[in-house]
Length: 103
Image (cartoon, rainbow, N blue to C red):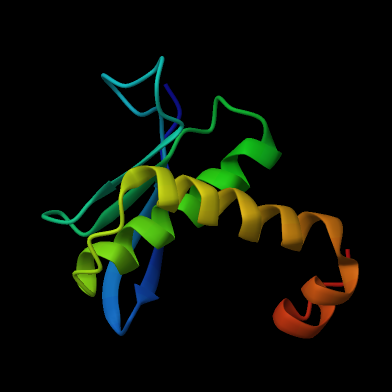
């Protein structure tokens, strides 16, 4: 098995690890997971790239929800994640202006 890719990230000023590895125990229901206790976001690399990106946005929203005690229901987090991901994917101008991404 190949070594998991890991990245140090900050969300709301706190350090987290972003780890690309199979999400064990949730294979059939989740392509990502947020673990507040371990301060980790996992993204399952077995999914296609578009789904991985959407999962990352979703897990970032999960983290913000937890840190800020927003108590958003999971369905609203899913809707926000899909909407933000779609806006980024479908609009090059948003990626350019917001992220400095040319492609």
